[in-house]
Image (cartoon, rainbow, N blue to C red; front, side):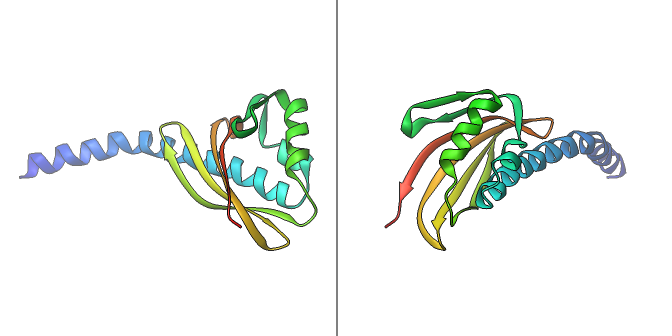
Length: 138
């Protein structure tokens, strides 16, 4: 029994740094997305833009739009901001290296829809931001 315990402990010690790196990457992806949506809720496009890598790509699939680089993404972010509009992340899951978010959209505390967003992150910055669906809830 003792040799089996040593093997199990060896595996745990060996795999722990790899698992920690994976958890850290997951947390960075969540933090980058949360930073962007919190800034949008505050109508702070400059702060939201800081969550994106300089060469990031943003896709709004329901509208068939593509934005490449921070300057174009800035335009998309301005389109998403409105006085009284807030974005709340209400669900998330990791799918491989992608983070899939469900985001509630509200105007003056009245939820009117959700959007599904898939992101990719590198070094704490969003490299891909893909709006895949928007669902109205009237």
